[in-house]
Length: 371
Image 1 (cartoon, rainbow, N blue to C red):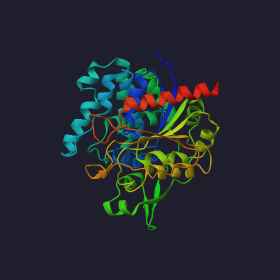
Image 2: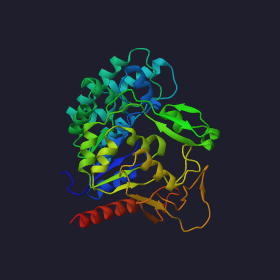
Image 3: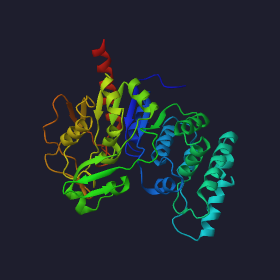
Image 4: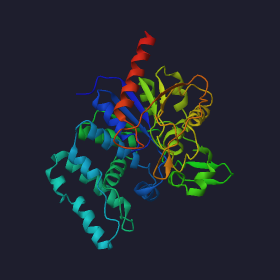
């Protein structure tokens, strides 16, 4: 049965908001994930360049998160999250791919027949379209299948997603923010240098990361109507968690997103990553909020920030990265809610149960205020 709880829309990438998505769904919320359409790395990069289609990696990961959270199609999750070997001869890779494409894999054999047949159909469509020269190394089987579904639906990603949701019985929604297939994210560093491509921005070398990002641009991008419908219907809209400059802020660069957010009376909440990364060295949480507001061009795209406030009054570091700091000068009109949000078992990560509780509390407060 579909959930009857509040509708939460999350604008983020494929993995960072996974635990929050799962927790919200299991607490009865209806969740829609809006994911980037400008992914340019990994398996998605090669598929996108070969077939000139929308990148499918973040969509695939978000769909698998939905299926897992709802207890649906566990076998499908195993197949969609599988990858081919990184090394080996072409003949060995061909045999490994055939193990999936011919339905030999034991998980495919045990799967519900109509689901297995659809998966094999989509996979064969993709293999035929990719051609003999395609580099299969470390390729994502799930990306191949979803790309095949996209081709089967004449390039309409919304139809491809709906077909997959129907097969697996998934209630939650996943939509790319834009259906445009040729978007390229670009960053200008503080010293004027330019970096083109989401994967290159995410993987900034140490020196460029310390220089810092001044701004990102996306070119002309039009919102997916499904994304606009989800935002208009939301009881809360969440920015993140996720890579700030590549998975969070660029959603506001898509025409129609900021305008629809402004018309919504729902709380619009930033949950930044707890740790800095190559994109955000020395970037405070308050500055992230200001840059979101700036990207919205003065519209009301943000109302709240959930801020981590640790009990230890020193700068903490996990691995190579320090915790995101606060400058204590948030944008005017933004409510900062500060708590210790760290998972007690996993350093440097959010306590997703606590985050979900705080989000649902804000939704309930919003309902009371509206009345």
